[in-house]
View (cartoon, rainbow, N blue to C red):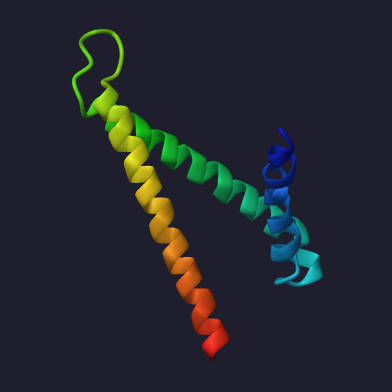
Amino acid sequence: MGMYGVFGTSGVLTYASLVREFPTHLAGRVSTGLTLAIFAGAFVVQYGFGLLLNAWPHDTGSYAVVAHRASWAIALLVQLAAGVWYCGLQLNEVRV
């Protein structure tokens, strides 16, 4: 439970760091844009999970276990790819 308190609330820090990258008079629009992007991203991810789950037959009234495993594996691979890409960007900034 303590780890959730540490990591679960860290997403708020993106608002503070992103607002610093824009002029002060645009702070409200920047925060609103970030919130919109988060909600739109959540919608796309949930919709994608639904498409993947529906790709397998589900005649028994529930979704196939393999569909859940495949969708979570794809989500994990996307996150790993994003992490590698992000770390690569960080390394390039250090070298320059």
